[in-house]
Length: 368
Image (tube, rainbow, N blue to C red; front, side, top):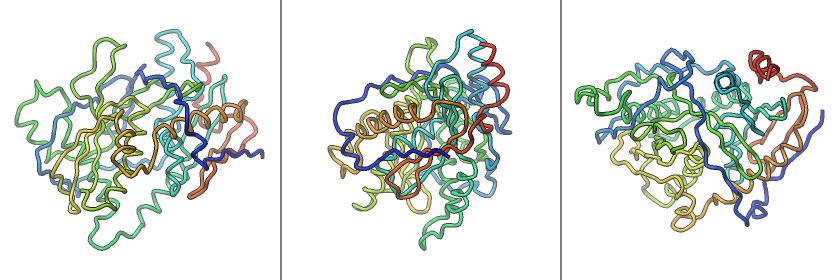
């Protein structure tokens, strides 16, 4: 089996000229409902409306309807949505890379995220590289995280995960606020949390010479989606973070900001709302962050623990290399081990697409 490696370190070789970026533009979307049923369109779109403070994120933990995502969904929903768009427009969606936003977030953050590893599967079809998460690796990591012992006084991993979903429920409405009654808005704390429903935006974007189609969940829209498709959408990403009490907390938060920024930057989400909570899961204050200004703030007033330009230049160089490495049929593993200074690309199957591409998608594309 052939194997190639791309050096992450030293990152200072990615300092310098700014890589050109194409602003992410939504080309289509899809939704999952509370039963995890897929549909085209925006049926699961949510609208931002600030929560009442203080907000208790523990409420309803015992009724949490948690999605079981152990099964391998591959890229099916994204490919079905692209197929529907191509049938509608009679135009092929041209791209060098098609993947989930989460995969590109890991690549963008790799220069400064030494502790964590990742594994992805990739295949090449009609000149496009399709990348998915390696499902077995994802499940293994979730099990490790679940069994992690927390320091005394800290909430469990399960509870902290719930806090994030609870904050979303407390911060969104199923319709614009105007037709909502005061009683409906105030009933949000008692709503059962179900994390199966999602609105997923599918965008066209580019980093350097690499054109991409990315699919990813969006938490809410600030007001409503504009009528003209050319106009930017004022998306909102919702996050929680521990209150900052000392320098150590500040550094932890700054590292968190790398993920917040990368996720939102890739889908073109302009605003991040952070709910700052105490160690008991009570949110006392909100902060509104402008996605584009986060790297500059980290550089100027933070510890400078990461550099957005280096992340973008690194991603551009890695994707250029990946396009040279994966050029024909077969299946590759894209892997970064924990604490490793390299990304490995290993060919694991000589032919076929290893389940990454659905038969319906390859059949449709063979007719174009």
